Image (cartoon, rainbow, N blue to C red):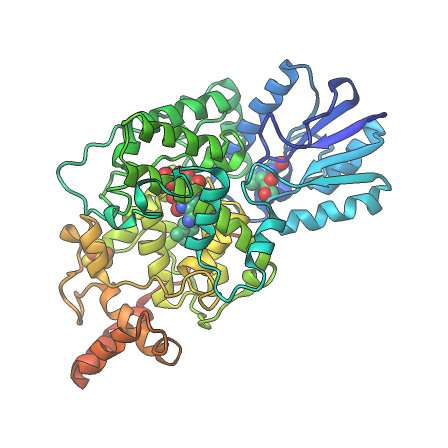
Length: 518
Ligand code: FAD
Ligand code: DLZ
Ligand code: SF4
Protein backbone atom coordinates (compact mmCIF):
# COMPACT_ATOMS: atom_id res chain seq x y z
CA UNK A 1 0.00 0.00 0.00
CA UNK A 2 1.52 3.34 -1.04
CA UNK A 3 2.04 6.16 1.48
CA UNK A 4 2.45 6.28 5.19
CA UNK A 5 0.27 4.35 7.66
CA UNK A 6 -0.26 5.21 11.33
CA UNK A 7 -0.85 2.07 13.39
CA UNK A 8 -2.11 2.82 16.92
CA UNK A 9 -1.59 -0.16 19.26
CA UNK A 10 -3.57 -0.13 22.50
CA UNK A 11 -2.34 -1.36 25.86
CA UNK A 12 -4.08 -4.74 25.53
CA UNK A 13 -2.95 -5.35 21.95
CA UNK A 14 0.66 -6.30 22.68
CA UNK A 15 0.92 -9.04 20.05
CA UNK A 16 3.72 -9.14 17.47
CA UNK A 17 1.38 -10.71 14.90
CA UNK A 18 -1.42 -8.16 15.50
CA UNK A 19 -3.66 -7.84 12.42
CA UNK A 20 -2.79 -4.14 11.97
CA UNK A 21 0.94 -4.92 11.70
CA UNK A 22 0.57 -7.88 9.37
CA UNK A 23 1.33 -6.96 5.78
CA UNK A 24 2.76 -3.55 6.75
CA UNK A 25 6.26 -2.56 5.65
CA UNK A 26 8.43 -1.07 8.35
CA UNK A 27 9.56 1.84 6.18
CA UNK A 28 5.99 3.08 5.60
CA UNK A 29 4.58 2.52 9.07
CA UNK A 30 4.56 4.55 12.26
CA UNK A 31 3.39 2.60 15.30
CA UNK A 32 1.71 4.81 17.90
CA UNK A 33 1.53 3.74 21.54
CA UNK A 34 -0.09 6.02 24.10
CA UNK A 35 -0.04 6.08 27.87
CA UNK A 36 -3.07 8.26 28.62
CA UNK A 37 -4.65 9.59 31.78
CA UNK A 38 -8.23 8.79 30.69
CA UNK A 39 -7.41 5.07 30.53
CA UNK A 40 -5.66 5.00 33.89
CA UNK A 41 -8.48 6.88 35.64
CA UNK A 42 -11.84 6.23 33.89
CA UNK A 43 -12.03 3.88 36.79
CA UNK A 44 -9.25 4.16 39.34
CA UNK A 45 -7.58 0.83 38.52
CA UNK A 46 -5.54 -1.15 41.06
CA UNK A 47 -1.98 0.23 41.11
CA UNK A 48 -0.56 -3.15 40.02
CA UNK A 49 -2.85 -3.25 37.01
CA UNK A 50 -1.67 0.14 35.76
CA UNK A 51 1.97 -0.76 36.41
CA UNK A 52 1.51 -4.06 34.56
CA UNK A 53 -0.08 -2.52 31.48
CA UNK A 54 2.33 0.42 31.19
CA UNK A 55 5.39 -1.74 31.80
CA UNK A 56 4.22 -4.34 29.27
CA UNK A 57 3.56 -1.52 26.77
CA UNK A 58 7.08 -0.11 27.22
CA UNK A 59 8.69 -3.54 26.87
CA UNK A 60 6.62 -4.25 23.76
CA UNK A 61 7.54 -0.90 22.19
CA UNK A 62 11.24 -1.58 22.86
CA UNK A 63 10.92 -4.99 21.20
CA UNK A 64 9.22 -3.51 18.13
CA UNK A 65 11.92 -0.84 17.85
CA UNK A 66 14.62 -3.47 18.13
CA UNK A 67 12.95 -5.34 15.28
CA UNK A 68 13.17 -2.19 13.13
CA UNK A 69 9.69 -0.65 13.52
CA UNK A 70 9.37 3.10 13.96
CA UNK A 71 7.51 3.54 17.26
CA UNK A 72 6.13 6.85 18.46
CA UNK A 73 5.67 6.25 22.19
CA UNK A 74 3.85 8.81 24.35
CA UNK A 75 4.50 8.53 28.09
CA UNK A 76 1.91 9.38 30.74
CA UNK A 77 3.99 12.25 32.10
CA UNK A 78 5.01 13.73 28.71
CA UNK A 79 4.42 17.48 28.76
CA UNK A 80 1.95 17.76 25.89
CA UNK A 81 0.07 14.51 26.52
CA UNK A 82 -3.63 15.31 26.03
CA UNK A 83 -4.69 12.41 28.24
CA UNK A 84 -6.95 10.61 25.74
CA UNK A 85 -6.61 8.15 22.85
CA UNK A 86 -8.36 10.54 20.45
CA UNK A 87 -6.26 13.51 21.56
CA UNK A 88 -3.05 11.53 21.05
CA UNK A 89 -4.11 10.15 17.66
CA UNK A 90 -4.93 13.69 16.57
CA UNK A 91 -1.48 14.93 17.66
CA UNK A 92 0.19 11.98 15.93
CA UNK A 93 -1.70 12.70 12.70
CA UNK A 94 -0.33 16.25 12.84
CA UNK A 95 3.22 15.02 13.61
CA UNK A 96 3.43 12.34 10.93
CA UNK A 97 0.86 13.37 8.26
CA UNK A 98 -0.05 9.74 7.52
CA UNK A 99 -2.21 8.73 4.54
CA UNK A 100 -4.32 6.40 6.63
CA UNK A 101 -4.85 4.92 10.08
CA UNK A 102 -4.95 1.15 10.51
CA UNK A 103 -6.04 -0.17 13.87
CA UNK A 104 -7.42 -3.33 15.45
CA UNK A 105 -10.89 -3.05 17.02
CA UNK A 106 -10.68 -2.39 20.75
CA UNK A 107 -11.98 -4.55 23.58
CA UNK A 108 -14.46 -2.00 24.86
CA UNK A 109 -17.45 -0.23 23.34
CA UNK A 110 -16.35 3.04 24.96
CA UNK A 111 -13.13 2.95 22.91
CA UNK A 112 -14.87 1.67 19.76
CA UNK A 113 -17.03 4.81 19.81
CA UNK A 114 -13.89 6.95 19.93
CA UNK A 115 -12.32 5.03 17.03
CA UNK A 116 -15.47 5.32 14.92
CA UNK A 117 -15.19 9.11 15.12
CA UNK A 118 -11.54 9.34 13.99
CA UNK A 119 -12.20 9.32 10.23
CA UNK A 120 -14.48 12.36 10.39
CA UNK A 121 -12.67 14.13 13.19
CA UNK A 122 -9.24 13.91 11.56
CA UNK A 123 -10.35 13.75 7.93
CA UNK A 124 -8.39 10.59 7.19
CA UNK A 125 -9.08 7.01 6.03
CA UNK A 126 -9.44 4.73 9.05
CA UNK A 127 -9.41 0.95 8.68
CA UNK A 128 -10.66 -0.86 11.80
CA UNK A 129 -9.72 -4.55 11.62
CA UNK A 130 -11.34 -7.46 13.48
CA UNK A 131 -9.31 -8.69 16.45
CA UNK A 132 -8.42 -12.15 15.15
CA UNK A 133 -6.66 -13.10 18.38
CA UNK A 134 -10.10 -14.41 19.35
CA UNK A 135 -11.25 -17.73 17.87
CA UNK A 136 -14.79 -16.44 17.31
CA UNK A 137 -15.28 -13.06 15.68
CA UNK A 138 -17.96 -10.65 16.88
CA UNK A 139 -19.89 -11.28 13.64
CA UNK A 140 -19.63 -15.08 13.99
CA UNK A 141 -20.91 -14.92 17.55
CA UNK A 142 -23.85 -12.77 16.47
CA UNK A 143 -24.64 -15.35 13.76
CA UNK A 144 -24.37 -18.17 16.29
CA UNK A 145 -26.73 -16.36 18.70
CA UNK A 146 -29.19 -15.25 16.03
CA UNK A 147 -32.57 -16.93 16.36
CA UNK A 148 -31.60 -19.11 19.36
CA UNK A 149 -33.93 -19.15 22.35
CA UNK A 150 -31.16 -20.09 24.68
CA UNK A 151 -27.52 -19.01 24.49
CA UNK A 152 -26.07 -21.87 26.51
CA UNK A 153 -22.29 -21.70 26.83
CA UNK A 154 -22.05 -25.47 26.49
CA UNK A 155 -23.40 -25.56 22.94
CA UNK A 156 -21.18 -22.63 21.91
CA UNK A 157 -18.21 -24.44 23.44
CA UNK A 158 -18.87 -27.61 21.44
CA UNK A 159 -18.88 -25.51 18.27
CA UNK A 160 -15.52 -24.04 19.28
CA UNK A 161 -14.13 -27.53 19.91
CA UNK A 162 -15.22 -28.60 16.43
CA UNK A 163 -13.90 -25.41 14.87
CA UNK A 164 -10.46 -25.61 16.50
CA UNK A 165 -10.19 -29.41 16.46
CA UNK A 166 -9.07 -29.25 20.11
CA UNK A 167 -9.62 -32.52 22.01
CA UNK A 168 -11.56 -34.03 19.11
CA UNK A 169 -11.57 -37.70 18.23
CA UNK A 170 -12.99 -37.86 14.73
CA UNK A 171 -16.30 -36.00 14.90
CA UNK A 172 -16.74 -36.57 18.62
CA UNK A 173 -15.08 -35.43 21.83
CA UNK A 174 -11.89 -37.04 23.08
CA UNK A 175 -12.78 -39.61 25.75
CA UNK A 176 -16.45 -39.68 24.75
CA UNK A 177 -17.63 -36.69 26.86
CA UNK A 178 -17.55 -32.99 26.00
CA UNK A 179 -17.30 -31.87 29.60
CA UNK A 180 -15.60 -33.45 32.64
CA UNK A 181 -16.67 -30.84 35.15
CA UNK A 182 -18.12 -33.41 37.54
CA UNK A 183 -14.56 -34.60 38.22
CA UNK A 184 -13.47 -31.02 38.90
CA UNK A 185 -15.10 -30.25 42.23
CA UNK A 186 -12.80 -31.69 44.89
CA UNK A 187 -12.71 -29.99 48.28
CA UNK A 188 -9.27 -28.95 49.51
CA UNK A 189 -7.37 -31.79 51.15
CA UNK A 190 -3.95 -32.76 52.47
CA UNK A 191 -2.86 -34.10 49.05
CA UNK A 192 -2.70 -30.56 47.72
CA UNK A 193 0.84 -29.32 47.21
CA UNK A 194 0.87 -26.81 44.36
CA UNK A 195 4.19 -25.50 43.01
CA UNK A 196 4.45 -21.75 43.37
CA UNK A 197 3.53 -19.61 40.37
CA UNK A 198 6.64 -18.00 38.84
CA UNK A 199 7.03 -14.35 39.80
CA UNK A 200 9.20 -12.01 37.76
CA UNK A 201 11.48 -9.60 39.56
CA UNK A 202 10.79 -6.07 38.21
CA UNK A 203 13.62 -4.87 35.93
CA UNK A 204 14.66 -1.21 35.62
CA UNK A 205 11.90 -0.42 33.17
CA UNK A 206 9.23 -1.92 35.43
CA UNK A 207 10.73 -0.23 38.53
CA UNK A 208 10.50 3.14 36.78
CA UNK A 209 6.83 2.53 35.97
CA UNK A 210 6.11 1.33 39.51
CA UNK A 211 7.64 4.54 40.91
CA UNK A 212 5.56 6.63 38.56
CA UNK A 213 2.35 4.80 39.46
CA UNK A 214 3.19 5.15 43.14
CA UNK A 215 3.30 8.93 42.81
CA UNK A 216 0.72 9.55 40.04
CA UNK A 217 -1.95 7.14 41.33
CA UNK A 218 -1.31 7.31 45.07
CA UNK A 219 -5.01 7.31 45.95
CA UNK A 220 -5.81 4.18 43.89
CA UNK A 221 -6.66 0.84 45.54
CA UNK A 222 -4.04 -1.88 45.94
CA UNK A 223 -0.44 -2.66 46.89
CA UNK A 224 2.56 -2.63 44.58
CA UNK A 225 5.03 -4.47 46.84
CA UNK A 226 4.41 -7.94 45.45
CA UNK A 227 4.45 -7.00 41.76
CA UNK A 228 5.69 -10.06 39.88
CA UNK A 229 3.53 -10.29 36.73
CA UNK A 230 5.02 -11.31 33.39
CA UNK A 231 5.52 -8.09 31.39
CA UNK A 232 7.00 -9.61 28.20
CA UNK A 233 5.97 -12.48 25.96
CA UNK A 234 9.14 -14.36 26.97
CA UNK A 235 8.19 -14.17 30.64
CA UNK A 236 4.60 -15.12 29.82
CA UNK A 237 5.88 -18.17 27.90
CA UNK A 238 7.93 -19.15 30.94
CA UNK A 239 4.83 -18.85 33.14
CA UNK A 240 2.85 -21.00 30.66
CA UNK A 241 5.59 -23.66 30.59
CA UNK A 242 5.65 -23.81 34.38
CA UNK A 243 1.86 -24.10 34.58
CA UNK A 244 1.67 -26.90 32.01
CA UNK A 245 4.47 -28.87 33.64
CA UNK A 246 3.66 -28.32 37.31
CA UNK A 247 0.05 -27.28 37.99
CA UNK A 248 -2.09 -28.34 35.01
CA UNK A 249 -2.30 -32.01 36.12
CA UNK A 250 -4.22 -31.03 39.29
CA UNK A 251 -5.87 -27.90 37.80
CA UNK A 252 -9.14 -29.71 37.11
CA UNK A 253 -9.56 -31.58 40.35
CA UNK A 254 -8.97 -28.56 42.62
CA UNK A 255 -10.40 -25.90 40.32
CA UNK A 256 -13.11 -24.88 42.80
CA UNK A 257 -11.09 -25.22 46.01
CA UNK A 258 -10.18 -22.27 48.26
CA UNK A 259 -7.52 -22.26 50.97
CA UNK A 260 -6.87 -19.38 53.37
CA UNK A 261 -3.62 -17.57 52.52
CA UNK A 262 -2.89 -19.78 49.48
CA UNK A 263 -3.81 -17.51 46.64
CA UNK A 264 -2.94 -19.35 43.44
CA UNK A 265 -3.39 -23.08 44.17
CA UNK A 266 -3.40 -24.89 40.80
CA UNK A 267 -4.68 -21.96 38.73
CA UNK A 268 -2.66 -20.76 35.75
CA UNK A 269 -2.58 -17.01 36.49
CA UNK A 270 -2.29 -16.55 32.76
CA UNK A 271 -5.33 -14.29 32.27
CA UNK A 272 -3.28 -11.07 32.52
CA UNK A 273 -0.87 -12.28 29.83
CA UNK A 274 -3.62 -13.63 27.56
CA UNK A 275 -5.71 -10.47 27.86
CA UNK A 276 -2.71 -8.21 27.16
CA UNK A 277 -1.82 -10.23 24.06
CA UNK A 278 1.47 -11.59 25.43
CA UNK A 279 0.12 -15.13 25.05
CA UNK A 280 -2.02 -16.53 22.27
CA UNK A 281 -5.09 -18.24 23.80
CA UNK A 282 -5.16 -21.00 21.18
CA UNK A 283 -1.48 -21.67 21.72
CA UNK A 284 -2.14 -22.10 25.47
CA UNK A 285 -4.87 -24.64 24.63
CA UNK A 286 -2.66 -26.54 22.18
CA UNK A 287 0.13 -26.73 24.76
CA UNK A 288 -2.32 -28.19 27.27
CA UNK A 289 -3.63 -30.66 24.68
CA UNK A 290 -0.06 -31.82 23.93
CA UNK A 291 0.45 -32.47 27.65
CA UNK A 292 -2.64 -34.69 27.59
CA UNK A 293 -1.49 -36.63 24.52
CA UNK A 294 1.97 -37.04 26.05
CA UNK A 295 0.34 -38.56 29.14
CA UNK A 296 1.49 -35.66 31.36
CA UNK A 297 -1.95 -34.34 32.35
CA UNK A 298 -5.33 -36.03 32.71
CA UNK A 299 -8.25 -35.35 30.41
CA UNK A 300 -10.47 -33.73 33.07
CA UNK A 301 -7.77 -31.10 33.78
CA UNK A 302 -6.95 -30.39 30.14
CA UNK A 303 -10.58 -30.28 29.02
CA UNK A 304 -11.38 -27.98 31.97
CA UNK A 305 -8.58 -25.57 31.06
CA UNK A 306 -9.46 -25.55 27.36
CA UNK A 307 -13.16 -24.99 28.18
CA UNK A 308 -12.29 -21.89 30.22
CA UNK A 309 -10.44 -20.43 27.25
CA UNK A 310 -12.23 -21.39 24.03
CA UNK A 311 -15.51 -21.78 25.92
CA UNK A 312 -16.03 -19.18 28.63
CA UNK A 313 -13.54 -16.57 27.50
CA UNK A 314 -14.78 -16.48 23.90
CA UNK A 315 -18.39 -16.75 25.01
CA UNK A 316 -18.34 -13.80 27.44
CA UNK A 317 -16.66 -11.67 24.80
CA UNK A 318 -19.45 -12.54 22.35
CA UNK A 319 -22.11 -11.77 24.97
CA UNK A 320 -20.44 -8.40 25.69
CA UNK A 321 -20.68 -7.22 22.09
CA UNK A 322 -24.16 -8.72 21.68
CA UNK A 323 -25.66 -7.12 24.78
CA UNK A 324 -23.89 -3.79 25.07
CA UNK A 325 -24.76 -1.09 25.94
CA UNK A 326 -27.78 -2.48 27.83
CA UNK A 327 -25.68 -4.93 29.84
CA UNK A 328 -24.00 -2.00 31.61
CA UNK A 329 -27.30 -0.81 33.10
CA UNK A 330 -28.94 -4.24 33.53
CA UNK A 331 -30.47 -4.79 36.97
CA UNK A 332 -33.10 -7.52 36.64
CA UNK A 333 -33.29 -8.03 40.40
CA UNK A 334 -33.64 -4.29 41.11
CA UNK A 335 -30.71 -4.47 43.53
CA UNK A 336 -30.12 -1.04 45.09
CA UNK A 337 -27.90 -1.50 48.15
CA UNK A 338 -24.58 0.38 48.28
CA UNK A 339 -21.32 -1.58 48.03
CA UNK A 340 -20.10 -2.24 51.59
CA UNK A 341 -16.85 -0.64 52.63
CA UNK A 342 -15.22 -3.99 53.37
CA UNK A 343 -14.90 -4.69 49.61
CA UNK A 344 -12.17 -2.04 49.72
CA UNK A 345 -10.74 -2.44 53.22
CA UNK A 346 -11.18 -6.17 53.81
CA UNK A 347 -12.27 -5.24 57.34
CA UNK A 348 -15.00 -7.74 58.07
CA UNK A 349 -15.38 -10.69 60.40
CA UNK A 350 -16.42 -12.85 57.44
CA UNK A 351 -13.15 -14.71 57.03
CA UNK A 352 -13.88 -15.80 53.47
CA UNK A 353 -14.46 -12.25 52.27
CA UNK A 354 -11.54 -10.83 54.25
CA UNK A 355 -9.15 -13.36 52.65
CA UNK A 356 -10.43 -12.76 49.11
CA UNK A 357 -10.13 -8.98 49.53
CA UNK A 358 -6.63 -9.37 50.97
CA UNK A 359 -5.51 -11.42 47.98
CA UNK A 360 -7.16 -8.90 45.69
CA UNK A 361 -5.36 -5.98 47.34
CA UNK A 362 -1.96 -7.70 47.49
CA UNK A 363 -2.00 -9.46 44.10
CA UNK A 364 -4.62 -7.68 41.96
CA UNK A 365 -5.92 -11.23 41.59
CA UNK A 366 -8.36 -13.70 43.11
CA UNK A 367 -9.30 -16.95 41.48
CA UNK A 368 -12.58 -17.79 39.82
CA UNK A 369 -14.43 -19.36 42.73
CA UNK A 370 -13.35 -16.60 45.08
CA UNK A 371 -14.72 -14.07 42.57
CA UNK A 372 -17.92 -15.98 41.86
CA UNK A 373 -18.91 -17.83 45.01
CA UNK A 374 -17.56 -15.50 47.72
CA UNK A 375 -17.38 -11.91 46.44
CA UNK A 376 -20.00 -12.22 43.70
CA UNK A 377 -22.31 -14.45 45.72
CA UNK A 378 -22.30 -12.03 48.65
CA UNK A 379 -23.11 -9.08 46.37
CA UNK A 380 -25.92 -11.11 44.76
CA UNK A 381 -27.65 -12.29 47.92
CA UNK A 382 -27.13 -8.99 49.76
CA UNK A 383 -28.69 -7.13 46.80
CA UNK A 384 -25.77 -4.79 46.00
CA UNK A 385 -26.37 -2.52 43.02
CA UNK A 386 -24.76 -4.15 39.95
CA UNK A 387 -23.09 -0.99 38.65
CA UNK A 388 -21.21 -0.52 41.95
CA UNK A 389 -20.12 -4.16 41.93
CA UNK A 390 -19.06 -3.91 38.27
CA UNK A 391 -16.94 -0.84 38.98
CA UNK A 392 -15.28 -2.68 41.86
CA UNK A 393 -14.41 -5.72 39.73
CA UNK A 394 -13.14 -3.52 36.89
CA UNK A 395 -10.87 -1.63 39.29
CA UNK A 396 -9.38 -4.39 41.37
CA UNK A 397 -8.22 -7.18 39.01
CA UNK A 398 -5.13 -6.95 36.84
CA UNK A 399 -6.92 -8.96 34.12
CA UNK A 400 -10.06 -6.78 34.08
CA UNK A 401 -11.23 -5.13 30.87
CA UNK A 402 -14.88 -4.35 30.42
CA UNK A 403 -15.44 -6.96 27.65
CA UNK A 404 -14.57 -9.79 30.06
CA UNK A 405 -15.39 -8.26 33.45
CA UNK A 406 -18.93 -7.05 32.69
CA UNK A 407 -20.52 -10.31 31.45
CA UNK A 408 -18.85 -12.22 34.28
CA UNK A 409 -20.10 -9.79 36.93
CA UNK A 410 -23.45 -8.57 35.63
CA UNK A 411 -24.62 -11.76 33.93
CA UNK A 412 -22.81 -14.62 35.65
CA UNK A 413 -22.43 -13.42 39.25
CA UNK A 414 -25.36 -11.01 39.68
CA UNK A 415 -28.02 -12.41 37.33
CA UNK A 416 -28.62 -8.80 36.26
CA UNK A 417 -29.45 -9.94 32.70
CA UNK A 418 -32.38 -12.04 33.94
CA UNK A 419 -30.68 -15.34 33.21
CA UNK A 420 -29.63 -14.86 29.60
CA UNK A 421 -26.19 -16.24 30.49
CA UNK A 422 -26.78 -18.26 33.68
CA UNK A 423 -30.04 -20.18 33.75
CA UNK A 424 -30.06 -20.07 37.54
CA UNK A 425 -28.42 -17.56 39.91
CA UNK A 426 -25.12 -18.57 41.54
CA UNK A 427 -26.56 -18.02 45.03
CA UNK A 428 -25.20 -20.18 47.84
CA UNK A 429 -25.28 -20.39 51.61
CA UNK A 430 -22.26 -20.85 53.88
CA UNK A 431 -22.51 -24.60 53.34
CA UNK A 432 -21.00 -24.33 49.84
CA UNK A 433 -18.11 -22.13 51.03
CA UNK A 434 -17.48 -24.49 53.92
CA UNK A 435 -17.38 -27.51 51.59
CA UNK A 436 -14.99 -25.90 49.11
CA UNK A 437 -12.64 -24.09 51.52
CA UNK A 438 -10.98 -24.05 54.91
CA UNK A 439 -12.33 -20.58 55.65
CA UNK A 440 -15.09 -21.39 58.08
CA UNK A 441 -13.17 -23.22 60.83
CA UNK A 442 -11.53 -20.06 62.19
CA UNK A 443 -14.29 -17.63 61.30
CA UNK A 444 -15.94 -15.59 64.05
CA UNK A 445 -19.28 -16.69 62.55
CA UNK A 446 -20.51 -20.26 62.83
CA UNK A 447 -21.27 -21.83 59.50
CA UNK A 448 -23.53 -24.51 60.96
CA UNK A 449 -25.61 -21.87 62.76
CA UNK A 450 -28.51 -20.77 60.60
CA UNK A 451 -29.94 -17.80 62.48
CA UNK A 452 -29.07 -15.45 65.31
CA UNK A 453 -26.11 -13.23 66.07
CA UNK A 454 -23.19 -15.61 65.42
CA UNK A 455 -24.73 -17.43 62.47
CA UNK A 456 -22.93 -17.29 59.13
CA UNK A 457 -24.37 -14.28 57.25
CA UNK A 458 -24.41 -16.26 53.99
CA UNK A 459 -27.03 -18.59 55.54
CA UNK A 460 -29.67 -16.01 56.36
CA UNK A 461 -28.89 -13.83 53.34
CA UNK A 462 -29.39 -16.84 51.06
CA UNK A 463 -32.97 -17.35 52.28
CA UNK A 464 -33.66 -13.63 52.35
CA UNK A 465 -32.61 -13.52 48.68
CA UNK A 466 -34.71 -16.55 47.72
CA UNK A 467 -37.72 -15.24 49.60
CA UNK A 468 -37.62 -11.73 48.15
CA UNK A 469 -37.31 -13.04 44.57
CA UNK A 470 -39.80 -15.86 44.90
CA UNK A 471 -42.13 -14.68 42.14
CA UNK A 472 -39.26 -14.67 39.69
CA UNK A 473 -37.56 -17.92 40.67
CA UNK A 474 -40.24 -20.36 41.73
CA UNK A 475 -41.22 -20.94 38.12
CA UNK A 476 -37.62 -21.86 37.27
CA UNK A 477 -37.44 -25.65 37.21
CA UNK A 478 -33.78 -25.58 38.25
CA UNK A 479 -34.59 -23.88 41.58
CA UNK A 480 -38.24 -24.49 42.36
CA UNK A 481 -37.22 -27.30 44.75
CA UNK A 482 -35.67 -24.69 47.03
CA UNK A 483 -39.12 -23.27 47.68
CA UNK A 484 -40.51 -26.66 48.72
CA UNK A 485 -37.75 -26.75 51.38
CA UNK A 486 -38.54 -23.19 52.46
CA UNK A 487 -42.25 -23.93 52.72
CA UNK A 488 -41.58 -27.03 54.80
CA UNK A 489 -39.85 -24.96 57.50
CA UNK A 490 -42.09 -23.72 60.29
CA UNK A 491 -43.08 -20.07 60.21
CA UNK A 492 -40.90 -19.13 63.22
CA UNK A 493 -37.80 -20.54 61.57
CA UNK A 494 -38.51 -18.67 58.34
CA UNK A 495 -39.06 -15.47 60.31
CA UNK A 496 -35.80 -16.00 62.21
CA UNK A 497 -33.91 -16.31 58.91
CA UNK A 498 -35.45 -13.13 57.53
CA UNK A 499 -34.96 -11.16 60.77
CA UNK A 500 -31.31 -12.27 61.06
CA UNK A 501 -30.66 -11.17 57.49
CA UNK A 502 -32.39 -7.82 58.05
CA UNK A 503 -30.27 -7.09 61.13
CA UNK A 504 -27.11 -8.02 59.23
CA UNK A 505 -28.01 -5.93 56.17
CA UNK A 506 -28.68 -2.91 58.39
CA UNK A 507 -25.22 -3.29 59.90
CA UNK A 508 -23.44 -2.97 56.53
CA UNK A 509 -21.42 0.22 56.23
CA UNK A 510 -21.38 1.66 52.70
CA UNK A 511 -18.02 2.63 51.22
CA UNK A 512 -17.46 6.17 52.47
CA UNK A 513 -14.90 7.16 49.85
CA UNK A 514 -15.08 7.14 46.07
CA UNK A 515 -12.49 4.42 45.44
CA UNK A 516 -13.71 3.51 41.95
CA UNK A 517 -14.34 6.84 40.23
CA UNK A 518 -13.60 10.49 41.05
P1 FAD B 1 -7.52 -20.17 35.35
O1 FAD B 1 -8.41 -20.65 36.42
O2 FAD B 1 -6.17 -20.75 35.28
O3 FAD B 1 -8.27 -20.37 33.95
C1 FAD B 1 -7.56 -20.40 32.72
C2 FAD B 1 -7.97 -19.28 31.81
O4 FAD B 1 -9.31 -19.42 31.40
C3 FAD B 1 -7.88 -17.89 32.41
O5 FAD B 1 -6.57 -17.40 32.35
C4 FAD B 1 -8.84 -17.09 31.53
O6 FAD B 1 -8.19 -16.64 30.37
C5 FAD B 1 -9.87 -18.13 31.13
N1 FAD B 1 -11.11 -18.01 31.90
C6 FAD B 1 -11.51 -18.80 32.92
N2 FAD B 1 -12.76 -18.47 33.31
C7 FAD B 1 -13.14 -17.44 32.55
C8 FAD B 1 -14.32 -16.65 32.48
N3 FAD B 1 -15.38 -16.87 33.27
N4 FAD B 1 -14.34 -15.62 31.61
C9 FAD B 1 -13.30 -15.38 30.79
N5 FAD B 1 -12.16 -16.11 30.80
C10 FAD B 1 -12.09 -17.13 31.66
N6 FAD B 1 -11.49 -12.93 33.87
C11 FAD B 1 -10.76 -11.99 33.28
O7 FAD B 1 -9.88 -12.28 32.47
N7 FAD B 1 -10.98 -10.66 33.54
C12 FAD B 1 -11.93 -10.26 34.43
O8 FAD B 1 -12.12 -9.06 34.64
C13 FAD B 1 -12.72 -11.26 35.07
N8 FAD B 1 -13.67 -10.92 35.97
C14 FAD B 1 -14.42 -11.90 36.56
C15 FAD B 1 -15.42 -11.52 37.47
C16 FAD B 1 -16.22 -12.49 38.06
C17 FAD B 1 -17.33 -12.10 39.00
C18 FAD B 1 -16.01 -13.85 37.74
C19 FAD B 1 -16.86 -14.90 38.35
C20 FAD B 1 -15.00 -14.23 36.87
C21 FAD B 1 -14.20 -13.26 36.27
N9 FAD B 1 -13.17 -13.60 35.36
C22 FAD B 1 -12.45 -12.62 34.76
C23 FAD B 1 -12.96 -15.00 34.99
C24 FAD B 1 -11.92 -15.76 35.85
O9 FAD B 1 -12.22 -15.59 37.21
C25 FAD B 1 -10.51 -15.29 35.56
O10 FAD B 1 -10.26 -15.35 34.18
C26 FAD B 1 -9.50 -16.20 36.26
O11 FAD B 1 -9.72 -16.17 37.64
C27 FAD B 1 -8.10 -15.75 35.93
O12 FAD B 1 -7.16 -16.49 36.67
P2 FAD B 1 -6.30 -17.64 35.99
O13 FAD B 1 -5.59 -17.09 34.81
O14 FAD B 1 -5.51 -18.27 37.05
O15 FAD B 1 -7.45 -18.59 35.47
C1 DLZ C 1 -6.32 -0.38 31.15
C2 DLZ C 1 -5.36 0.55 30.47
C3 DLZ C 1 -4.66 1.49 31.22
C4 DLZ C 1 -4.74 1.52 32.69
N1 DLZ C 1 -3.84 2.38 30.62
C5 DLZ C 1 -3.69 2.34 29.29
C6 DLZ C 1 -2.88 3.30 28.61
O1 DLZ C 1 -2.33 4.22 29.20
N2 DLZ C 1 -2.75 3.16 27.28
C7 DLZ C 1 -3.35 2.19 26.56
O2 DLZ C 1 -3.14 2.10 25.34
N3 DLZ C 1 -4.15 1.32 27.17
C8 DLZ C 1 -4.34 1.37 28.50
N4 DLZ C 1 -5.17 0.50 29.11
C9 DLZ C 1 -5.88 -0.50 28.27
C10 DLZ C 1 -7.08 0.15 27.57
O3 DLZ C 1 -7.99 0.62 28.55
C11 DLZ C 1 -7.72 -0.87 26.64
O4 DLZ C 1 -6.89 -1.03 25.53
C12 DLZ C 1 -9.08 -0.44 26.19
O5 DLZ C 1 -9.94 -0.38 27.26
C13 DLZ C 1 -9.66 -1.41 25.15
O6 DLZ C 1 -9.84 -2.69 25.71
FE1 SF4 D 1 -17.63 -17.12 55.26
FE2 SF4 D 1 -19.71 -17.92 56.72
FE3 SF4 D 1 -17.62 -19.49 56.46
FE4 SF4 D 1 -17.42 -17.27 57.90
S1 SF4 D 1 -18.67 -19.03 58.36
S2 SF4 D 1 -15.92 -18.02 56.41
S3 SF4 D 1 -18.74 -15.91 56.76
S4 SF4 D 1 -18.97 -18.83 54.83
